[in-house]
Length: 307
Ligand code: NAD
Ligand code: UDP
Image 1 (cartoon, helix red, strand yellow):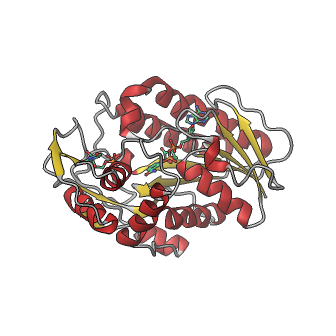
Image 2 (cartoon, protein in one colour):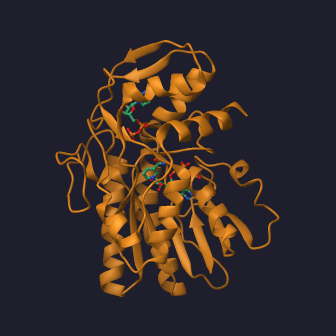
């Protein structure tokens, strides 16, 4: 197969490029480097079957030659970016998704959308199954991301129903691991970097809000299982082990052997109170489930940050 990966220089995108190449397929990575870095792909440049295009997919996308799958991951994803580049996020979720769908249609390729647990907003149903429609504030400080992804899902389903495009939708829950940006502002990267540098860990609110963290290796295995399956989705891919953010901070201290303090800061507006994937569907239709536990994944990520 020849696979286009938009957002290929990002955290998840770079892992995906590596995994696709490792199974013998070719990769065209497209990225405008707004939150990604070519350094994430250092080991892939020069490998046969790997091509990189520096391009903003919110503008028309052109890829010469045949394409079998378009995996659309391009989008900033950290809450820290929501206030910094809100219009770019809305554009890549809407125009960028439209362009990536157009490329897939033109090439007769399968389309894969990286959606998110954020489509569930601050969920009133717990854990979240794919059948839950969500609780999103359409004008709040996370709305540019949540609504862009909801629009992207709708656009993907319109191409599927109207143009009979072969599509897959994954709803990704909080994922972490090597190649995360040290300064991307997310909880795992903040806590590990603060712990390693001996600085206080910044817990927002009282730390009782929950998340469920998936190690990147498991997540990417889930992506490829969905891509290869006959199931359109959406499918939740995430680790159902749920932790409070205070537990996450304490675990980060333990795995790094750090003696940093924990400091409490104000909770951002509309911060979801709880999040945990129901992965019954992924187990049934993909035979997928995560293997790596939080502690093991955090230890590997901490070792990478140290390097
Ligand atoms: P990331 O910021 O590391 O990667 C995103 C990549 O997309 C970056 O390399 C960035 O430069 C690129 N990009 C952004 N806008 C672009 C544009 N207009 N044109 C071309 N490239 C563009 O983030 P990530 O964590 O790797 O997220 C990848 C995808 O997975 C995103 O779609 C995100 O919404 C989704 N996701 C991630 C998580 C997570 O926990 N990491 C959770 C849910 C969903
Ligand atoms: N968070 C925190 N300290 C930080 C960064 C994040 O307490 O330095 C909290 C944040 O408010 C949220 C949780 O950790 O409740 C997860 O945040 P993250 O940015 O990792 O992901 P998201 O909110 O998008 O799920």
